[in-house]
Each structure stands twice: as C-alpha cells, then as structure tokens.
Length: 384
Ligand code: PMP
Ligand code: GLN
Image 1 (cartoon, rainbow, N blue to C red):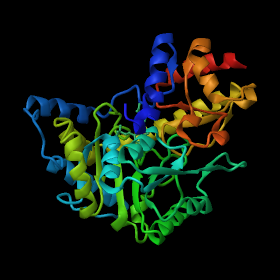
Image 2: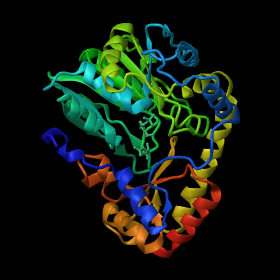
Image 3: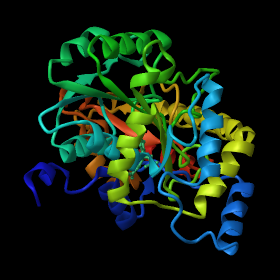
Image 4: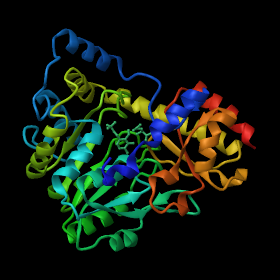
C-alpha cells in the first residue's frame, strides 16, 4: 500500500460494525437508519428496473435527476443550470473525493474542521495535498460545539487552496449559524479559497433550526461546490446517489475526475431519487420530527445512565461524555462496550488530529427504531 494511504487501512465504521455483529451488540456506531425510505421512492426504483433502466446512465447523471436536484436547491435561493452546474455522483463520498482530486495540487493545503468525517482526510491524502485542521470549540454552558473564526483564520496560509465544511455536522450535531458561516465566507473570499460543502444532513435540522448553504453567502456561489446525497434524506444510504452543484468550470473539473473513478452509477436509483426530491419532502419533514424525538429519547436515557450529553441540533448523532461514569478515554471504552454490555458506539477522537479535547466523547447514533434505542439504553445503564 502506498505510504499516503497507510494511515487509512480500515474505517472505524467497518471495524465497529464488525465488532457489533460478532458480539451481538446493539449497533449505535455506524450511522444508518433501520427503516426504509418513502414507499413511492422504493416503487419508482422497482419500476425503473422493470422498465429496463439498467444500463450506463449519462456521465453527468440522468437529466431528470439533475433537474430535480437543481429545483431542490432553489429552496435555498440558489440557481444551478442542470445541464452544466449539477453532477450526479456515487454518494457524497465520491463527490468529495472527485472535487479534491480535480481541484487541489500535491503540496496544496486543505482546511478541515475537526472532528471531521473520516473520508475527508483520506481524500485529501489521495489528492496529494496536506490537511490543516481547526477544532470546533465546546461552549461550556450549552454543550454546543462552535466554530472559532480566529482559529480558522490562523489555519489558512499561502498554500491553502480549499476548505471542506460540513453542516449539519457529523459527529457533533452542530448546525452552523449564519454568523459562523459569514465568518467562513469572508475568510474564503479574502484568501481566494474554494469551498467544498458537505450538506448530506441538510434536511435533518431540529427544533425549527435552519440549514444555510455556504454558497448562499456573499461572494460564495462562484467558489463553492455544494455536495449532498439521498442517503440521509430518504433513508437509502446503500443506494449511494449523491450530487455536486457549483459553477460550471468547477463542476466540469469534478466531472473530469469522476469519469475515471466510477464513470457513472446507480441507474435505476437515479429516477427514484428524482421522484423523491420532487414529491417526498413532506415525508422527510416527518422523518426529521421522528429523529428529533429519537435524539431526545437517547439523550435523556444517556443522562439517566450517567453520561454527560452534549447539545445536538441536527444529524443522526449525539456525543456523550464518559467521564462522569469514571472513564477517561472514549476509545478504550468503545472497544470494550460491545463485549462488556452489548452496545457499540464510535469514539469521537478517531475523527481528529488533535485528540485531547475529544478523548472523553463517544458518538451514539439515534437513527434507529425506538425499541433498539431502548434496548441499548437498558444495557448502557449497567455501566453505572
Ligand atoms: N458526509 C458525512 C458527514 C457523512 O456522515 C456521510 C455518511 N453518511 C457521508 C458524507 C457519506 O455520504 P454518502 O453515503 O452519500 O457517500
Ligand atoms: N456516515 C455514517 C456515519 O458517520 C457511516 C458511513 C460509513 O460507514 N462509511 O456513521
């Protein structure tokens, strides 16, 4: 294995899920839902297969999906030409990797906010660039993890080419505010950075909060690749239908890289996701409200079990502090938990370069049936 990939031989999700399966543990580690997406979307995929939509789709993605993505983005007030400014990818993961491969040179720097989703560091390494990381900072009163503009400014240097930003944020559950995003936008403009935004949890914002795409801020539309996917919005993480929207020069660069990674993907799922984007957003509102209730169920249960619980404004995840239970290290605990009490979680520190501020936190996923959450909580009570 080449040296630049040696730090990335396995993912925490694969390892924890394997451990959970081996031990029969309740898996609150890997974030995937245990119920299906909207029936109409599933029927549309079956219909597409029956109708023979089983060969290579067009390179940029099926026109009807590109149109649906473009229409969907108008909810944020942004306009993307479906023919030139939208590219369908194999999940957000490919969109992120292809964006970096297309736009950063070996030796460039890419700024990541940590904790960062695991594929970011690997994709930066594949591109030959170097990552610079900026830690979110916990507000001691609210337990919210906030972005510190001064720290971000300090991480940007003359070789910095791009910033990769995720909101709603996995694993902290932070939804970046307009003030935080404005500071990010100003730094991108001032330093002529390309912004790559990972918005896969765009619809999973709770308590009446709002997802604000960075591309909607002044000076950003022309320098932002906005990435999302169907997996989290429509409970179909295995379909791997994603997309990237941005100015045509940037999107055509991403297409150049993408065509040699996978070329195309997921033919019969593309019209099904197009259908869902056009007609199932009311279903998604219900999903979001369900998830907010699940967040509360898990957060309250974790508190009762003795954990410290941090604020979660969106996504599938809540972060729990293991110190009140007498543990110092979340990773050590996560490796024991499945065997010891039959629950799997993910240590937050694996998503960081600077581990210390994150050592005591474990991420638990709440995108699970209530009875699954309750069983996990019953078991977690045994830790006290
Ligand atoms: N970004 C984030 C923040 C994620 O949590 C995930 C995992 N679902 C992805 C990207 C990957 O998305 P996809 O499955 O569409 O590739
Ligand atoms: N995005 C999911 C998570 O954060 C898992 C994705 C994966 O397994 N690679 O849990």
